[in-house]
Image (cartoon, rainbow, N blue to C red):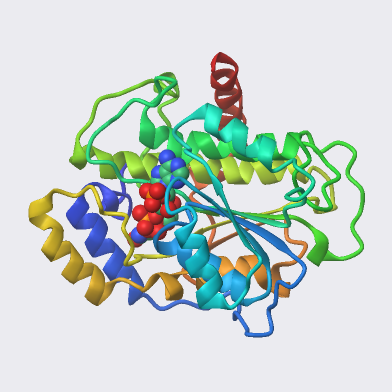
Length: 342
Ligand SMILES: NC(=O)c1ccc[n+]([C@@H]2O[C@H](COP(=O)([O-])OP(=O)(O)OC[C@H]3O[C@@H](n4cnc5c(N)ncnc54)[C@H](OP(=O)(O)O)[C@@H]3O)[C@@H](O)[C@H]2O)c1
């Protein structure tokens, strides 16, 4: 059954209206991001940091004293230089990655194993697109499926398998876990998801990973579906990494609410002036929208938690489709099978 809530992200107009009305919803904040929530001595990797939310998060974590690695498809080196200038922190590095290409993800993980870059404390998986139509990746996959979901599965699992995290004592099977002295030394992985993950009625397992043709209308609907895959993966990842009472990895997921970013860059040109106006008036600036992600990255409140999901600054349960262990298991199995074909 499709509830009224679920229909809210089915097309560009309802998606924008839902985003705006969500901003006015009353929330009990999960906590507060403080100026004293520092990241000195921590290495934070943010992908898709050339624009919008990713760029704003890079500036914020740099201001909090982190060593920042920006993994980007474009903007190298100028965006990194801008982050240095805006934050006053010279410890900002840029690496190239194209998440639509498996080879590029593999190359990034190789670079992250070099002695000068090894040891990520906090990973923020942020890159995302809303394409105007379907496009094929070099490996023949559908681009939005790849960038918004499958690249995260490949990238995060590869990073864990290659021990790219600081304080990492467990693999994706959760074996060999050792207790940690302090919650703050537990690696954190943060996924930028979306409330639109609640939109799809069901998983389409039979079509998993298959290329499909679509245009802009369907793109918004599929965006929600891929965010459902991402959210389901985040819950399953936490389950696998934290099989016992100890937390080995903190896995966090969040919806930043509507952000005045470049996410609608592929919208038909005729709508650009209107979208700019609506985004400018109603949507949050990337710096303000970054607060929930920075809270999950830097706050002691969430240290040692195996999983958390925020919508804006409010704590919520993820959609029950995403938290169902059977769905998590199925998604993991299909993703592994697809990975073996690449
Ligand atoms: N804007 C919203 O209202 C909103 C709401 C909820 C969730 N989100 C999520 O927030 C995240 C950030 O989006 P945004 O709003 O900040 O949009 P944005 O300004 O368009 O930023 C998207 C970022 O992703 C990068 N990217 C896209 N394709 C890539 C690829 N193949 N390889 C590597 N990087 C790639 C872009 O790099 P280039 O600059 O090189 O293209 C850019 O840095 C996304 O996951 C989005 O789904 C946004």
